[in-house]
Length: 414
Image (cartoon, rainbow, N blue to C red):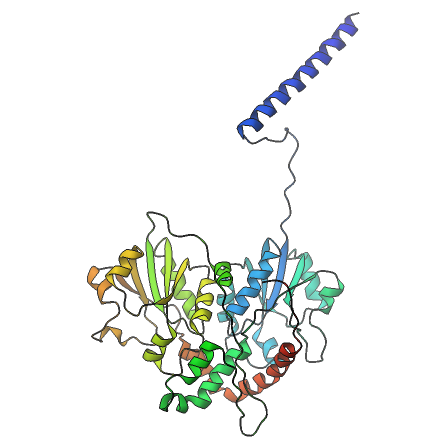
């Protein structure tokens, strides 16, 4: 009888415990409180999906950034391989920007989590296994445009065969070949630009008119493809939030043409001076009037997207005024206006129409030391000094790009 009574008592306690537990759980749920798992039972953490994308990222532009944005959307973490200088030279011709500058550029893109230097141009079986085992990569990503090796084989054939390949849509209207081509056109037509048509080439770049130039009787030429900016693309690149009520807002402006490592580094330092970095992008007309009719190489929307993709930038003014006015400082609640020591034009301090006269008078102007001695003219000089090699490289690449555009079909994605 005692054992029966004991069993009944145990059963009643267990049942009571279950009822009490259910009541507590229901109460927590009704009040929106978190429900913890029972002691001794660990909730399994979901493994992040890691995706890999590689590239030369030479003359890095908003098309590269949009590809990285799309790749990141296919996973939780994006690892990017940057191809070595030697591999680029062997497969495409000499790079315009060396590896250390390309590493700075890729690392500054807001959608990138990790960067691998000296990645191979072609993904070998050994490197692919290294990605899967050492870097825990789940998928390898590339655009819908073909990437062929010198022998004509697909650079991503192994990843496709392994079932670990995903494709994104190529960003229309720009490529490194296109940008180098714009500079080569400026070199060949600069006398025309400077003499009778104030900004003939710059206007073609801004409005996307294709132009083909025969060089010495050759049938090959340079075509400028049409970039079609949309409001959705600007939203995709934007952070989507403004400064807090007590935020220290730092303002820096400029052309930011051919966005390069020097730009990235000065933006990094400027961002460190406050809580929110606002960047003013000057109009095409302003740049043409101050730096010559052959500039800018990239138009206003292209330059704005490149700056927006930088992780140090919170917001941009698309078409910022040349002069920083009191009204502008008040409107955006700017705490500090900064400028680097390395720039295309440092004579503004001597001019009567000093664009920073107002913030200087207010005591909120600061000149900061530029970490890198690089300007847009530096990049152009690299092209000009070795223009024959880049012309040959472009002629080869333009043929494949022409085939891509001629055979292009609609690909979903953004």
